[in-house]
Length: 87
Image (cartoon, rainbow, N blue to C red):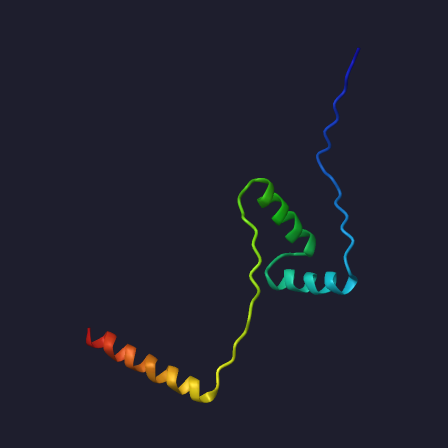
């Protein structure tokens, strides 16, 4: 009796996703120096499989300051820089 084990070297992963979401993700992938969204997925899966990353989600939240707050921060920064120069 002959038993043949076949281990494929590659596997095609298909993920249903909204077209607009895919387009936005593709654009962002290119902004972050990936050639394509596929490269991002390949990178993440490889790192995950090799236990080289832990995945967490951190949402970026932009906060804007007023002109008044900016002046206060500039004054604090100037004071700190003067103190640092003095030693």
